[in-house]
Length: 234
Image (cartoon, rainbow, N blue to C red; front, top):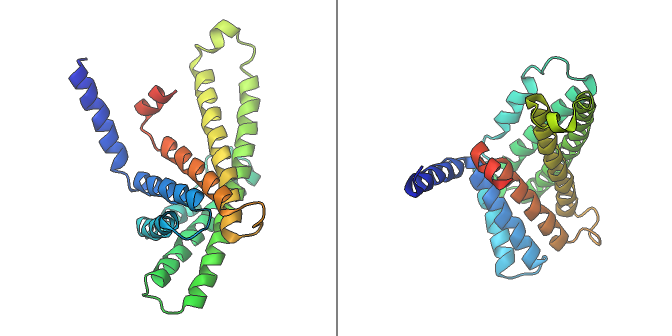
């Protein structure tokens, strides 16, 4: 493949990546929390960027609650443990509720919904729902990693030189890596939610919230990369 063909292929992957609304949302999220980190809650340009980007992101998420509502009523894979199924469905229910309520918050901040006090209360409730969904995600990832670890142990009887050539072993190893990354992101999102709700203002300051949110956003951007681009990143 010539250099020009390789460049075209890489640009095609970039176009595919940036065409996703979810990708643009996560890039905006990185800008939002990066600005929060820089402002540390103090008035100025960075705080203005933080607030404006936060409001703009809510437009990307209009009607997105339908996705998790669909996941909530979809059948689960056979053989899934009941406790993980319940946690997964709880995550879908809480995230769908958060995204639905977030639309009312957007209406309030846009001036369409006039009751500001109720809009603020709904905003608080929506953040608690998001924190709850992040906790459920964390527990699901821990459970799935435990299951993967048990299945990988069954392949330990393969010789060291052979197991890395075994497709089943490689697939489980890749799943384990993906789950570990998802676990880190979910755990960081819990800290972000605590910061936004100001549940521990002395420890989780706006700067800490911004730092955790920025890293979490970068992980999300990586997770959305097309498979060929991920392979190059490794």
